[in-house]
Image (cartoon, helix red, strand yellow):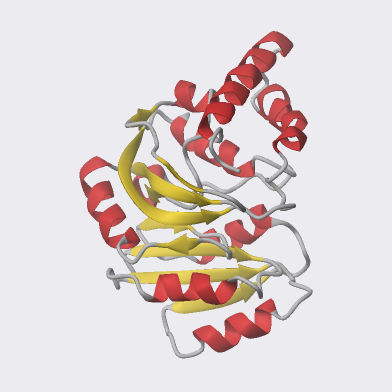
Amino acid sequence: MSLASIITPAYNCEKWFKETFESVLKQSFKDFEWIIVDDCSTDKSFEIISKLIKDYSNFKLLQCEKNSGSAVARNIGLKNASGKYVTFLDSDDLLDPNYLEEQVKFIKDDGPIITAGYRRMAENTTTNFIPRKSITYKQLLTGNDCSCLTTMYDREVVGDILFPEDLQRHEDFIFWLNILNKGYIVKGNDKILATYRIISGSKNSNKAKLLKPLFNVYHKALKFNLIKSCWYLLKYVLYSRKKYRNVK
């Protein structure tokens, strides 16, 4: 059993995965497992991942029965994880060598749920994002600081929570809201500890297409009335515009 678990959903990542793999391999903190769940990739991702991890007993590759999306893949990872501390890593993103070391140290002092700073590597810019020092449930409703890339939680305290599998977008947002709705507060680590790769044409690159699914988070998933849903949607959009204003 490892102290920390990294969970990675992987789909058609043959172009990026070797860099992601190397960033995990370079972690200064060694007491961790890495669970990668291939979502039935149609390229050579499964073969590439299998070859890269074959010599590492703490790295495990699983596969979905059918292509089902990142929420299902992450849930499979969660059901197979043994670590006290859980964190996520997409198959095209990068962890700094001290990511786990710094986050495990931080969560022991400030847990049970924490998030950290990261750099956004876009087509024309690389910019840093620093999360707020503390984030309550109500604050998270107005803007999401909890990237799956740099958020870690103590599963022994928070309990076993899964991603909703019936949403096409924002399933990670609901996941963090469900944790904070128990009364927990996210503590922000202002150190930059990872790199989020923004790929043109990816699922989340077009912010306008995320508006309707985001409204559905408030109105359908959280059961807010129409006015309350619109108000939170506006607050979220304004926060996101500020958050991404220098990303190009």
